[in-house]
Structure formats: structure tokens, C-alpha cells
Length: 218
Image 1 (cartoon, rainbow, N blue to C red):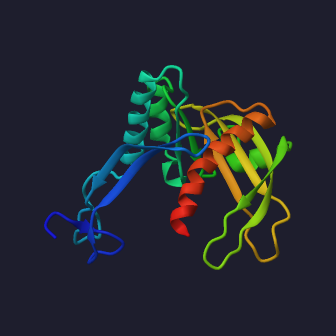
Image 2 (cartoon, rainbow, N blue to C red; image 1 turned 135 degrees about the vertical axis):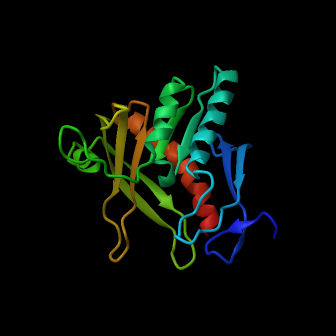
């Protein structure tokens, strides 16, 4: 127990592990590129928790991928994160490194844009570029089913001091069964996606990560 920290609640003890795991677009596993382990500190009398800033794990993961990319000039490496990775400091760090590796992040924040309006609303108001269909795997209490999504994308400039230009993609399910939440993915990337083929490629990269997550949630 010595050195372990709280997990889901204060009396539960253990450590956290954040792994950066590499797969090919064909879903072939290549192994773990980085493993960031930490133990949380207990909350103090004011309910505050000290220690390292846990979001740093996403930035370190990108840095390890960028280092690997420098040794593989003929190979495209893409750092893919879930919604926890939607942090401006990660995008800024990638820009500092010259985008040695591309990045693709599931968007968590419907950011306000400098020219008024919000990010997701701007993209969702745009033209449909195409459609995709895929099979949503079954899991406890839910059967596998086909999902059909419309695709939209825009290149936008994020507000704030970074002034980063990113591509925002919205993949919106249409025709979802009654009483079933539609599958909606909002993705951010440093890469441009000017047509449906480019958008579909980015979504396929995200699905390579998402399918791993679905496997462990089944």
C-alpha cells in the first residue's frame, strides 16, 4: 500500500497507467510506445489534490510519437486521442515540434470562435461532403448494428493566443433506431481534409483507436 494513491474514491488504492499504443491502419498491433504511470495524492483539508498535472500524459505521449517519427521519415505517424486529449497545450506543443507527427483528437469542447459562433455549430451548418457506413460492435445489452453517418468538415482558426488552424470534422449518424442515441464523432486534426476521401481517412484512423476502446468496454 505504501506509495499508492486514491483511484475512483479516496479509500481505493492503486496507480494509474496511461499507455501510448501503436497500431497500423489495418489494425495490426505494433506494441506500446510509452507508459506513463502515476499515483494520485490524497485530497487536502480544502478538498484540493496536489501533485503532477495529469493532462501532461497526453503531451508526453505525443512527444514520444514525435521522436519515433523522426526515425521513420518514410512512415506517417498519427497521435490519436479521446476527448481527454482535447487540450490546447497539446496542440501548441505539436506546433512547436513542427507537427513531427500528425494528431487527431476527439473534440470535447464546443469552443467559441473569434469571429462569433461556436465550433461545432459552424461545422454542422456546412455542406455534407459524403457518407460512411460501418458495423457498430455489439456489447452487453446491445446488439451489433449498422451505422450510417453524414460527413462535414471545415478548416477553422481556434481562438486564443495559439491561433492554431485545425480541421474540425463532424460525423453525424442518420436514421438511428428509436430510443438509441445516434453515434456522433467530432474530431480535430492538424491535417487538412478538403474532400470526402480525406475526411474518411481521418475517421478510419480514429476508428482504429475507438475499436480498441470498444473491445475493453465489452
